[in-house]
Every structure is written in structure tokens, then in C-alpha cells.
Length: 421
Image: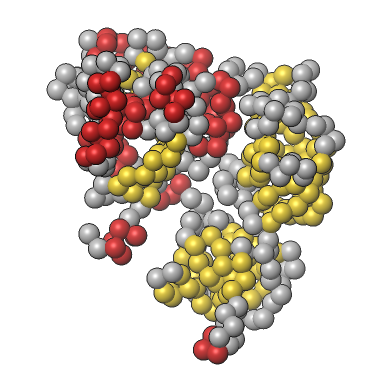
């Protein structure tokens, strides 16, 4: 495979979630090992550690648990990112923790995912953690959900148990906003249905997990209808051969942009046409989300970071009062009437929390109107007022233009993430 072919391969981001000890890290270790994506010395180091701890066989979970405290306790605490590729696709895995006190880590890891793998222990069925993770996946609008019913080897590969758990989850998921759900019976420890088809479950006629990840259609996960191009940087090379070059660099947040298309600049409202689209690999005739490009316009317009190029007849909402669901990340509770800095696409603004409407019970979807104390890992619906208008779509319509992060003005810490309703 050439470097060019590798760069052009489609990238799939997926996240894993599940209760503690459901085998998330073992599953990822198995995916990496069976798809030959780890080096021999990594495998030998894990093998030596497993032997030293007196474990039977090789503990593949040690491949992903990077923190020393994770390896000692055998649990995942932080979000661990792992990269691997097969001849068909490149992958980024966000291995997120299962504990209730790490909800914020799950939100961080899952916010950009195409696919969420939710692990269920075949012995225990759907538990509270399963419901919570499914609710978060639904809130974050992750397009594809794969329910991996793990540890099938501990229930004698029972089809009856698999069907029972499938029915349990389907009944619960009918209340959620999830479109594409797949169920795969696996044993991460033994490798059944992870990369290779299981001989022990000949009753299962679906695909293996690896086949699903390589082939699931993700091209339409991005919004390719509404053109949204937040400007990150103005490119002005001060060299003689590029004397008149003035380009606007950024990542396309939505839609398809073609040479000759008419665009409107927000907030100024000026219109122009696209003269040229440059990429790292040279000029292209058209570009689409989520490509990183530099756009040149036919007219000289004053454009700076934080401005947005959109289609003239298809514009986002432009408002200063915004309603959103916020997941709170910080030990210091969310302050009603509190002031925060927010980042939205490439623009920065300040805001005040106008109103906290309710807190969401992440296990039952119940709206708590009484308790307005929003602490770390809580999810709540709030209204904010910003110092300048934001150009946004709802999160359901576009995950890039519909998301916001909150920053504490005193400490500069990221304290919350918001999804615009």
C-alpha cells in the first residue's frame, strides 16, 4: 500500500462502553492481537506481566490499560485512545471507563465516534450501567450502536441467553433515539466472533465484530447537506510567488463545497464565489465534511478566525440565547447566573447561565425539576446568553456546529460540554 492510499483510507472512530469487568479492554486487546496490529515485543511484555501475576494465558486487557493504577486494579479510569488499521480502514478506539463517576470521560471519548460498542456480560444481562451508556450514546447522537454480548463462553454459548438479552435491550432502546442497533454474541477472552467466526455458535448467522467495523457505512454520518465552514486561520504567505494569496483555512463542518459555488460570510453577510479549494495534497474541484482545506474567494472580504462560510440560501441559526444539554466535568458545581468562556466551532465568546431547567437522571431519563445543583458528571438542560451571536445548528442536525465547550475564566479548565437543542 502506498502512502497516498493509506492517507485516503476511510477513518472509523469507535468507542467502547460497558459495566466494570464486562471485558472492554480484553475485547480491544483481542481486536489488536487478532488483526495483527501489535508488535511482537508488546505481546511478549504483556505475556511476561500475565505470568508474573499468576494469570492463566495472556491477559490482552493489559495492552490498553495505560495507567499504572489501571493495571493494578484491572480497571479503566481514563479514556485510552488506540490506533490501528487493516487493509480496509483506519481505526481510532476510545476505550472509556465504566464507573458512574467517570461519565464525563465517556462523553469525551464518545463525542466524535461513528460507532459505540456497548458490552454486556452474558451472565448478567442488561444492568443499570448498560442503560446509562445507551442513554449517553443516544444523547451524543452516535449513529451506530453495536451491542456486544460478551463472555458467551461462560453461559455455554447459549442462543437462548443471547436472545433473552437482545429482547431486554430492544425493549429499553425503543424509548431512545437510536437508529442502527446490531447485536453480536462474542467471547473476547477466547476470540469467538471478534475477528474470526465462532465454531461454537453456529446458530448465529450475523457477521463478526471486525467485519462489521470494516464494512459499516459511515459516509452519511456527516451532514453533507448544510454547508458550514468555520474559519480557523487566514493564510497570507509573505512570499513573492504567493504575493496575492489570501486563503481561509479550516475543517469543513458540513456540506459539500465546489469551485464556483456562491457563499455568504457570517456575521458580515457579504457574498462571494469560491475561486479555489486547496488541500495538503494540492488543489481539488470539490471538498466535503470532514476535510481540512483552504478556501480562496473571488472577492476581497474582511474575514477572520471565528467567521463562517455558508450557502446563501441555507444558513444556520444566528442567536445569542441558546438552549443546550450540558454534561458537567468539574468538581466546582455549575453556577446559575455564572459567567463562563465558551468555544463554539472556531469562535470564542463569553456567556452567562440564564436558567437551569432540569437535571436529567441518567439511569431513568427522569427530569428532576427540583434539584438544580449540577455537580460533576451530571447532565442538565440549561439556557445561556452569549456576548455575541453564535452561528449554530441543533446537535441532532450537525454534531460540529451543534456542540459547545465551557471554560472556567479563572482557571482556564474545560468545565463542561454542551449539545445545542
